[in-house]
Image (cartoon, rainbow, N blue to C red; front, side):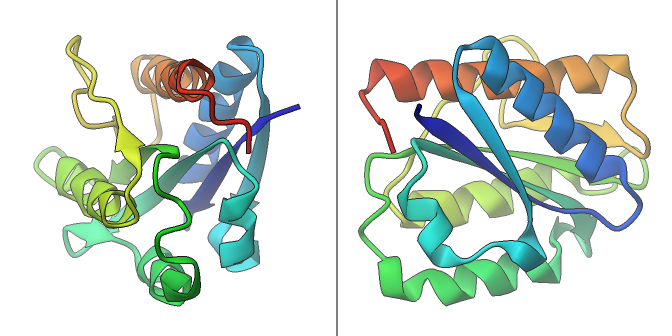
Length: 160
């Protein structure tokens, strides 16, 4: 079965909780979800996935260091993710704390790899976000993100 890979960096457990909800959305769309903490992820893991969703806590307004370091190691597979579907989610410490900037910093890395990113016209335009511990509204956005990424991966024929 095709799968969506969910890579995340979580310091407090909030991003892990969000990653779990993204996985629920992926499974709700009929695909397998594989969750990996960024410290256990390797660039080759990206090659077998039909889609990739990356989550991070906000660190100085951008993705945490582990996420950036991971993507710095993907130069060896550059060009091989072209056409795969991607998405992003983030948690930050407060309103105006950089959640959307963090999501955008992740999306930039996915786009440099040639990945397809679908915006959401409803509310969480760039990706799911939470301020501190995710509430049900943020978790619903995470499930929606997983569902949308899996649905788009199936629509474009990405099988991993």
